[in-house]
Length: 216
Image (cartoon, rainbow, N blue to C red; front, side, top):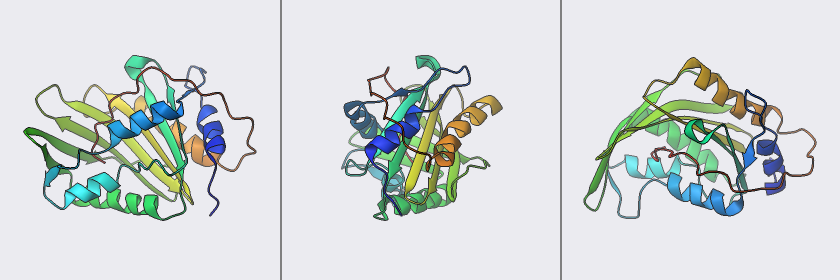
């Protein structure tokens, strides 16, 4: 399996277009790291109930600074999608995909604790035909002291390529239009992964990416 370079991944996510024709805005390396930090599930002292879900949730985020990654945002700040593409042949992200499957089987209702903070994670899997060899689509709902956070997440892989798309939701039920739009971005990355690579787009920092809801 060929590992794609950061430049190739940047070209892939940079070629995406929103339904209105507006091009995606690539995220620079520093902003990607900030986004990966926000996606990481909990601090070191995090515990979960059920306990076995802790490591599965962490592995299912598909985040590692050592693995080539590019990301872009599409749409206005209030209705923004984030698409991230990574390339890994070490088996680490493949194991992460396996962990997502476990999470959706055994960890759909999880209480997450850290210090005196506690939130509840609910996952609802959706049927969706993505173009990778292994795929997951689901809605994460995080409830705690504030308003609930709802996020639609799509994850797919093809060889060494791993693609994640996230979109914030006003409630736990995404519309058909939102599902269609996010899946079109994720599928476009898979479908064009082997196209000739043009000059990678210049990266720039976009508006703050939406909250991802953290757990898997």
